[in-house]
Length: 79
Image (cartoon, rainbow, N blue to C red; front, side, top):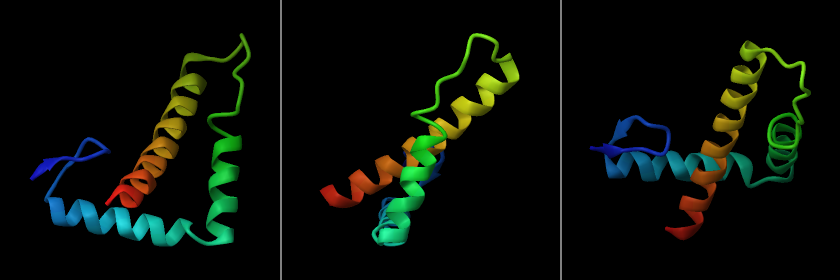
């Protein structure tokens, strides 16, 4: 097993399969719209100066999940 994109250990085959499944899910127009929505509420969201520590941690967690999915899509394209 190897350390995965998401910080968990998986076999190379399981990692490859998961990347394929994520790519299949987000390859449609609807999937791309969902990714665009996720980006708009995570990466493109600007936290104001009044954001609390808990709110910032939550936002960063959502950003992390978005980038895991994007990285899986990139890994799939490169394989």
